[in-house]
Length: 487
Image 1 (spheres, rainbow, N blue to C red):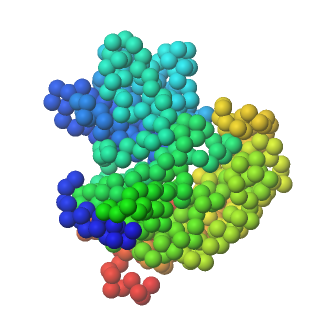
Image 2 (image 1 turned 90 degrees about the vertical axis):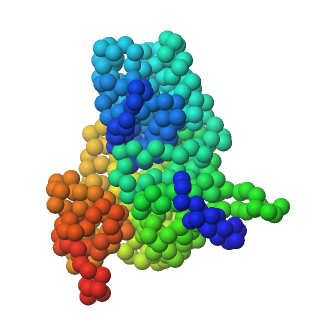
Image 3 (image 1 turned 135 degrees about the vertical axis):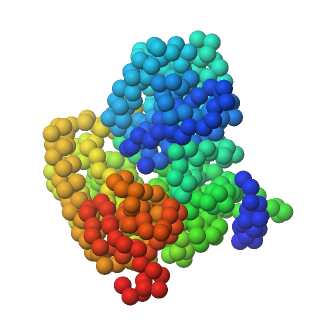
């Protein structure tokens, strides 16, 4: 396998060709009389990566992108179904878009992604606010569905595939900073957590051909990108088996192998990944991270809860002790400086006050760098919705969530404060939101760092001496390479 990887890297080097948040693909491109497309994405990084695939499919069908939803010929909302709040935001947005449509009857509106898969009938028949409904595995079919909708019919395809990975589609990097990019390495999920709708909206897990991933990463580096994030619902379970070139034997590539392949493209290309699952992250992956300086020392390791009984009814397939052992392994192999973040759910079905306290104690024990924390939101069709009553009152959920957030904010502030006086290597991604005199980027541990622009520019790696912090942000000043050892 090493020979095959080395050959692929050589070929790619010589071939010099080719984040629950709302994100808009809003870059205008010359339309030259073409029809225009507006895309808005809700939810996770996977949705944003999918929108880049959709933009590529529709560009080939003759659509230019626009930043103006009100004047677009075609509007797509790429949706999230993880929490009820995300679905309500999409419904509100659809009402607004239909106001635009009344003024421009030729406009078509489509709902894509997880919400489309889950609520296809309701969106089409009851609410009658959309013309096109397309699930995550049917984006290749969008041009046909648009043509169908133009005749007055509803364009619908929510078929879930066991093979589709979109490996051959080159995503359109719209609304990009030109420095960081997302690469989807797998689709779907086999974990069947009882609270989660993803296996039912995105289908079963399948891994993408590693050499198509490698080519996409190499192309991005050739184009000037400095960081890629490898995406999957559970990247640690990535596995691909295929023929070895020129031989009858097959090669087997796991996530550790894939990480190494991408890291070898160039030491100047940073590599991140998300999301890891505690049951699957191996010491082999951790040692691979340790081996390569350009693989970021940061792991998002969702806990979801701190109590073993709760983890069991969530069907997380690990207990509190297993989770703590994995954290210990991360600290042992990668050191205390490795950043770790988490997901945590407050008020899951049947949660007692004592079990909630176990989540609080987990936060104190692990001392995560930051986290994504939510009150439980029942999703129809999930095992939890079928088996358990959503029996924790809303006010108790919110109180427990507030306690989780309070601890995490305190710990984040304490951990950041310890970085004052240290030097962090930061990839400058663009201007600070508050001032064009400052640049903003992220450290190896995925912490946002703000520093004076001086002579630096977007895409530079900058050694920044941290001088002050908040619970969410570090501030500092650049220091020259020769002086780094002094700090």
